[in-house]
Image 1 (tube, rainbow, N blue to C red):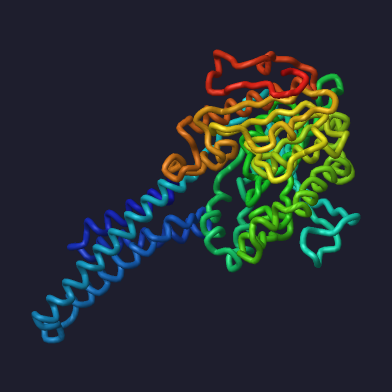
Image 2: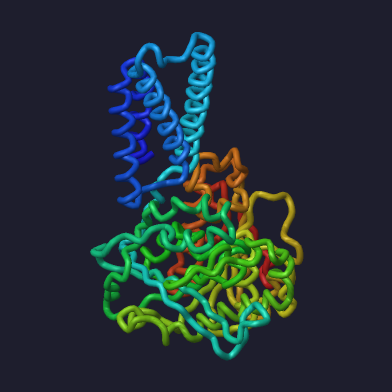
Length: 463
């Protein structure tokens, strides 16, 4: 709860407590209106507080009505029967106002202005957003003659000198409101959540001129590049540059610097199966390969100068995990891959030549076609890890956005911070080992220090 929201509830409570003193009650109502105005003009408005605003309006309307009635000449006042009916109306208004205030208080708790877990590495984090255009292939929809991709890049900085980036830009939740009002309303407070990344800050110079490996993140179906910011910031703070893209049209909102493209799936114009068919998966795979191949041409010079484009890893969540597999199978420039609870709609029959990790949520069975996914041609190994107590969304930031994560089923029994910490540690150990040649031995097998992460080697060569 923000300070402004607390003051709204305080003024509302005082207005109700002072109802028998109409002038005082109206003063508290006026104070509430003033706080509401400041909240809106300061850009701090969050949709859950709207019910409290409505309750405040109802209380003030009652107070004005009572004040006018008591100020009227005696002869003009209503008779006893009319007065009794008016009292019933007032009491019902109070009940409804109290209910609205209670709903608002619950929603403010359920959708808080949270503080995201901080990255643990030695570097601070900066971020910038670019638009990449692939003119060599059409977009996902028939009338698109090129493929436009919004890409957000996170990179190491020495200090956070510039403004910290919001979880989502405020302008991006206004554009799609009439196309997808439910999603726009639910997301309308995300611009108030601050990340740990400063916008357009100067990149750090790596020690001894050493450059940082590049990691590319692919989101899940109906997700977006912002869904794994906690993990991304942690990787960057440990010496990586991460580029996360919105796969335009299957991201819920593809957030460009100058516009927002709402997924047709969100607008219920196509079915989700249309975004997991052969063509859509090829588009996703080629998105990642395009970023791997052409990102150096789009990055600001200062940021591009610290990236080692000869060391590229990919990782993704859900359908993005399969996208990572398909990208590894196609693009030899990619050196390592990681799937975060990916799911199978198409097996990689040719096998994945790069080292690869598959992290799965706590389910009793292996993913379909896991052997085909991890059938090595050369190189390897391919590792399978299961995070005990985790649900599908534990591999994203979603459980951090509401204390109701267990009730809503978006988190398993495992504590979300512990789950993300383990995901971060094993992801970092994997990329460190295969992109930086730093072996922490965390991937040698199941660790007594981390019993929540079950470990299994499923490479043919290691069976």
